[in-house]
Image (tube, rainbow, N blue to C red; front, side, top):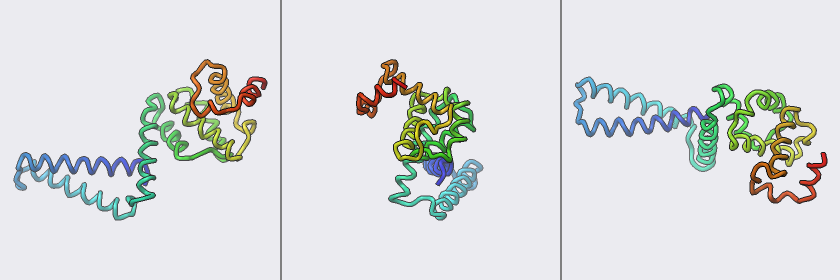
Length: 185
């Protein structure tokens, strides 16, 4: 299920709950205009919820994990208030990946050139994690990265290793000789 469908489903359920509460607390008769409007909404919303469920878009187990993952991505993307709608869509697509591959290089290069600098610290950390995970997975070497990506990632790492920025916990585990190798390059 896409992030938009997940959001629609969640909002429909919330809307149904509010409408049912309103309907019960106001004791509206079905012949009254407000009562008919609420009944129409409930009918339409329940049909859509049933359609989403029937299409197999909501299942338990693995789908629950996927839904939670998609929701987490949605939250991260929505925090990036300085990105345009299209840039948020692109960023969300990046976050759906565990790591980048060479196939992502053109899109990464464009994103790092245009939108990367407007990402929050968290957004930059999310991108960096995927860049470095691609290297760890032997998809590519650092030197293979597009120039924009390579420069901005090197700047981030240098700032952290030189003490200009606080070092994330995972980076504290980098051996000292590897840190020194980066400074010599």
